[in-house]
Image: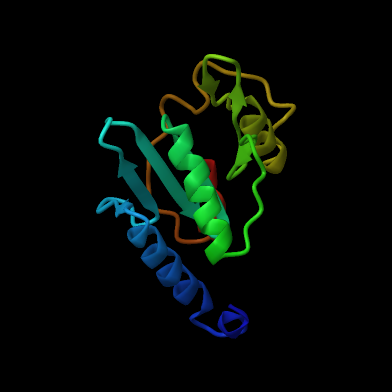
Length: 151
C-alpha cells in the first residue's frame, strides 16, 4: 500500500483497489453513486457501504454481514472501526434503541457562525419584496464554494 502514497493518482488507485475488493466480497456498485456499494442476502437483508474520501459508513439490517465485511476489510486494508456513527460530513447522527435520526441544529449553528449571522433576527420576508433582479457588473466576486455550502 505504501507504493500508492505520494502519487498523483493515489486516491484513484486506492479507490479502484477498494472497489475491486468489495466486488470480490459480493457487493454491487451503485450506478447512481459509484461510492455506494450494496449487498442483499438470500433472506433479503441489506448491507450498504458508502465511501467519502477516507471515511466509510457501513449500515444495514444484516448484522452478521456487517461484521464479516469489517473483518474482510481489515485483512485487505488498514482500517479503524469507530463504532457508532456520530458525525459525518459535519452532520450529527443520533441514535436511540429503536431509531437513528439526523438533527441539523448543530450543522445550522455552524453555518450561521461561519457566515457571522448568529446574532441575526428572523424575518418572515428576509429580502425586499419589491427588489428587482439584475446583473451586477462591478463588485466583489462571490465565493462559489461558500455559496454552495450554504445552499
